[in-house]
Length: 591
Image (cartoon, rainbow, N blue to C red; front, side, top):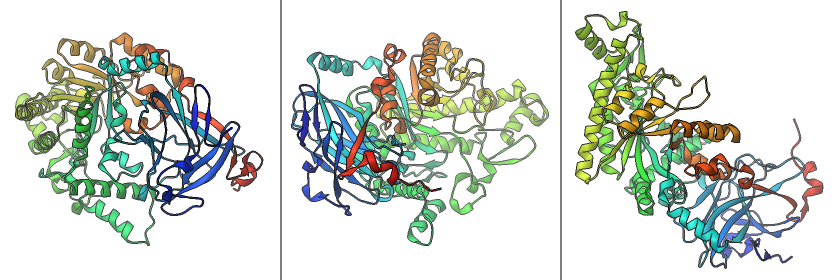
């Protein structure tokens, strides 16, 4: 078997990573700024992999593919557990692609007596004139990376035709995905605008039809804001303390510190260059020309800080007069939408963000926030004026009290709609309004039924305020998450799309439960789905293989997980060392 490649009439392996360019970035030993060349053998393969530990800052490499025509492309990498160097991040792209695809398998498949190469599907592509670019996560969030081979499988003409027809069919794009807006910065290195594109590029050839990208967490934004009362995430006491941790070597630096520092560095650098990540991503998504809509998500809970820190600069600490008050008079470190000043804060953020960013709409995330208003003075005054009673003296479930709160929040929603219409008129398009909520007759974490939290979602649908409702919840009787027949039926009558959301069922409950969930959704008439924090799902090759095909329901209901599993290939030798005989004696086995 040739060491350069293993060829057959169907499959070709490129195993000699010492052919990567630039040659000056390769070394036969561990060196800062370089990739180490490491020989390896399996039962069928022999080659030279490239590797770099987390502490090594290594440059991008290019490996020639010398291929033409359409291929299925697979990558082979090593995820060794015995190095105790954290889970690897694999970054690869074709030279003609705009951004890296990130792979993060997580826990190693290794056992004490064996270690494995792992083979994952990368892409279908016409490789004519293209090479493969290999990258590494460097800097504060450096991660180990060992890349062993590229596997190329030529595609038959009928396969290419089926693929291209499938990609051209935009009717299957029924998946909405959320991106936190900053959590991904805790994963690995994001040092350039192209790194931002890596978050949305996987959606080009998928069933994703809409992106919800967070721009704020209450009054805290992840873009530079000029709204009075709001604060850019890089400003204030907490970021200053993080900076001090890295300046003072006497302080211990944890993974949390590194993630926060990475976030600050990236957001500051982008802001200094006048770049808003959401605008960068929105432009890229729109330029794909595949019909994906880009919406801005607003987290509705406006939290204070416990213990209170006036120097932190958060809205609640600076404006304690706008806090929520419980029935017994307890003051909560959380802003209340009963106050016009709080509503105006969020409305101004919506106005600013939709003006700055070419969004197609917004999503008000109400699952991040309950409660929104309780027994504040505006509520007491409104209830007393209409009913002549003290709202604190009636049963908390009194419909009159619920409707008093709901009236305040419904008026706020009308203001949101008018704000979007104002921005849309200036931009020459209509901006859509959606909410992320839960079924109208169910409780949610830290909250009760929507109406108990002032959210009269059924009335909002009837009033034509909403273009879509993302519903996440749990029916304790059926175990089916998020399905609300009233949202669905009312939505069909009032042009409001129902979107069924729950990452837990998609991710953690097994194939049979997934099929059960999808069957129940189909029976209920739910045709659109949503996934929370998809930026972490799409870097898991097995989960993304399933999730990206959400629009193909027959395929989903007959999903074969084995066909999409990451393949394990047992290593026989590494760097000339017999792994089969000596690994169990090598690994750490103490208490």
